[in-house]
Amino acid sequence: MEAGATHEEPPRPRTGRPRADDRPLEREPREEIVAVASRLFAERGVAGTTMSEIARRSGLRQSSVYYYFRDKEAILEEILGSVNRVVLDQLARVNAEGGPPALRLYRLIRLDVLQLCAFPYDINEISRLSALQEERFARFWQERRALNRAVEELVREGIAAGELVDVDPRLAALTLLANDEATQNWHRPVGALGQLEDDGYEPEQVATFSADLAVGGLLRERARLAALRTEARERDPA
Image 1: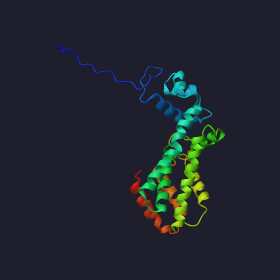
Image 2: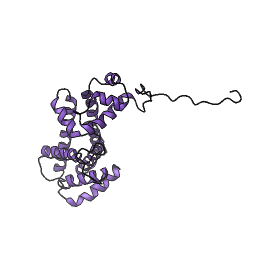
Image 3: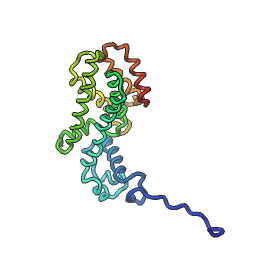
Image 4: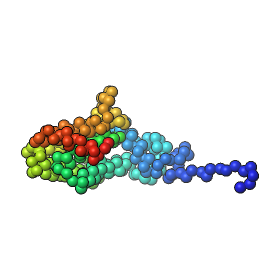
């Protein structure tokens, strides 16, 4: 380099296509679209969100949004991919790590509620909308049925092991999962549709209380609840 010359930093590479206003994207365009759509779905609902608004908020041209997704339902399909799959993966990990059925059930409920508290969209609305187009969202419902069956089997194991009271395993599984999802009606950090004012509860507190309430009501020996709570927190720190 010649004397007196100044060193210039090389330009930072852009990720994907530039925004409509030429600002670089921080993520891949597809990821950016999904993130923006999730926030809009939370704020306005899926029905109240348009592709043009998704494009505007993401800073992309509308043609770019259509390049990745043919309509907002296609974006919804992308989002739905994480709903059941994450908790199914969690359940597989919990079962692989072993432990008594009651402990595995406690861990699953706590992890599921933690996940739901973090979702930036209304899972109940998304479930309703996907039910109206069940053929298009067939994978979502297949995975949901698989999740129901897996939790049902876990309850059945707990009953057979003498840890849980004798209940209808299928009805228990449906109720447990429904309670997890209902928690999100009042505790969502983004797009607080129906969120109580100044509730002040952290996701960890909500998740642990939900697991206490659910598993505590099924345990034959409720005195075991504190030990289950402690071990679950040690295995899955929030």
